[in-house]
Image (cartoon, rainbow, N blue to C red; front, side, top):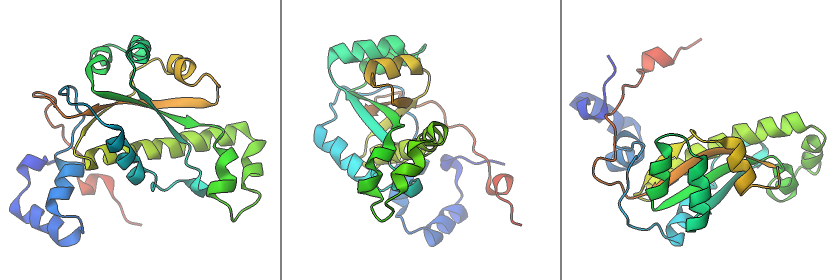
Length: 214
C-alpha cells in the first residue's frame, strides 16, 4: 500500500535517516513536504533569490554538458499579460497572480556553446550542426532534466514552485523566443505559498512496483 509522508512510520523515517546524507529537514523541504503550489502570497521574489537558485541548478547533469535550458523571467505587466493569454484553463488565473513566472525552454542551438562547456572535444559542435533531429532531441531531453533541477532549486530557496505544461507551446515560443530556435518546456510560477496552496497529496508507487533487478 502506498503511503504518504504524513503516514510514514517511525521505522521508515529511521531507515531514511540511516541511508541518506541529507538531514530529515532537507529531505522534507526538497521532497516529502514539497508540492505543486496553486496559490501564492504577494511577497516578491528577488533577483538575488533567482540567481542563487540558478547557481544550484546549473550543476544538473546533461549529455556532453550541453546545458540547453534557457529561462525568461516574466516580470513586466505587459509580458505577463501576453503569457496569461497563452495559458490554458485554470493556469491563466494562477499565472496572473504569482509573484514571479519563469518560462523554461530548450535552446536547439545549444551546440554553439559546446566549445565553451565541452572544450576538450573540438568536434563536439560539428556532431550536432548537421543533424537537426538529433540536436532537437538532445535539447528536449536534457532541457527537461534541467527543468526538474530548477524545481528542486526553487524548493531549496524555501520557495514553492508551480510548474505547468498546460499552455499554447507554439504561441509561447513565438512570443518569448522569436528566433525560432527554442522550444518551451514548462512555465513555472514561483513564490511563497498562500493558504490553501496545495491539493491533497496523491499516492506514489512503492519501491517494489517500480524497481526490478536482473
